[in-house]
Length: 403
Image (tube, rainbow, N blue to C red; front, top):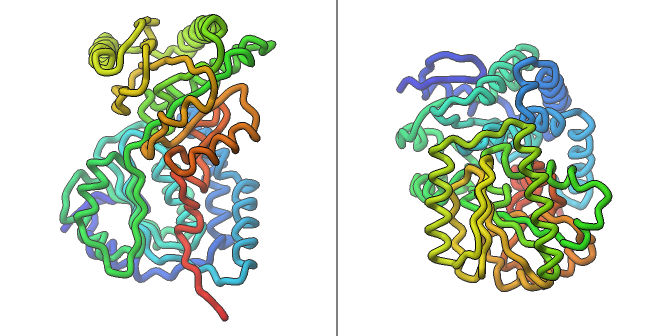
């Protein structure tokens, strides 16, 4: 069977031969110097590339891959190892990233290769400029990293089940980033009995702002600008992008804070030249109407670049969403009003105006019913080894118990 290889070079290859090459390549030690050196070179290449400069998500990736961050991860790994176990690679990792977030495949590969694994990545047949830039720079950097060149394989294909079956049969760990439908479909494809699987299905995220803290802020523009980055970098389709905004406080303060915030958000969207096509505006209006009929609504405001649906209640709100700049909005009297709302599908809460102790107590009271990340507004898209309740770095490793 012939497939399209993208990394370590762009060419058509025999699937069996490509898989044999990766499986036969030796595993590197966790945090091998060659890996850290390659990632540092790759990071610098992204920073220097004129095309990559147009995409803030690529700059964020390069920042996360810089040597200082990798050294911090290595130090955390050494602390785990000193806890009394030998930590070794899983073996061959098969990554299936989503098509709508262009950088996830590198983050997933990065944590796996730092753990010492050999890696096979399936790239969507839907080509984006960001993916093409990353693959071009990746291949260039591989020229000076022969061990990684033999142990890394990135293929571009659609939903051909036989290809996924062939790769899964060789995998020691499979990582599925995607919606519920993708996860359920791929889960029907068998793995070797010893293999493990990490899944990242559909998730929902929202923001909560304390109205009094917002109104007392000396400069509110950065709040709106950071919220814009959280929401619109991936057209609101990233799992951690907020779709619903809660204002905590009295009705008059919440109304004043919301009006000011939305005005600043619109101004920044115009400055960033974020455009919603007529089709997108119609789609989000239609979607908002359907949600209003289900959950109740008090208002609908179309700002052009985005729209806001004010809710009368939120207890019947579904977690489906159309993307494209539709925000739901609701006022709560206290943070604990969210306790009955939170569900297992909820991933990230971005916040403003709350201190760490309040949030820690809130997370304790949730007691696992939902939410895996509570981060300040502006950090929704910041990738971390801790994701969806998993320690990804340790998930890519095996513990060898030594008595």
